[in-house]
Length: 116
Ligand SMILES: [Zn+2]
Image (cartoon, rainbow, N blue to C red; front, side, top):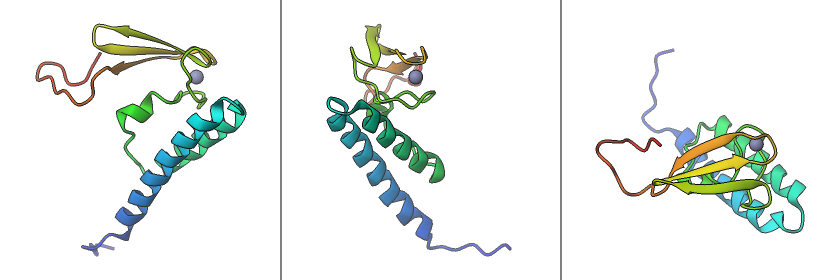
């Protein structure tokens, strides 16, 4: 079928899904102190939304959990955070994955495109 719809309801779903995803990750942060296993569950749900709707994950949220083992990251508790020349290096204490993220997402550098 080659019908192309101009109005895409999928976009609406996507918007709602993105909001839900952010909400879940915020809830995970709040819950982590009391029930870390529940926080991990929120992360999994958020991740499912992300993959299902092909959502873009804001940089601030990328630092919130491990994309390998999907555990919520709490500096000092479930991950180790180091800042190195404009990058945040996060080591997951559960699976050992090391993630490098740009420190300041809003600042655009022409030479380097957000790479660490
Ligand atoms: Zn991990």
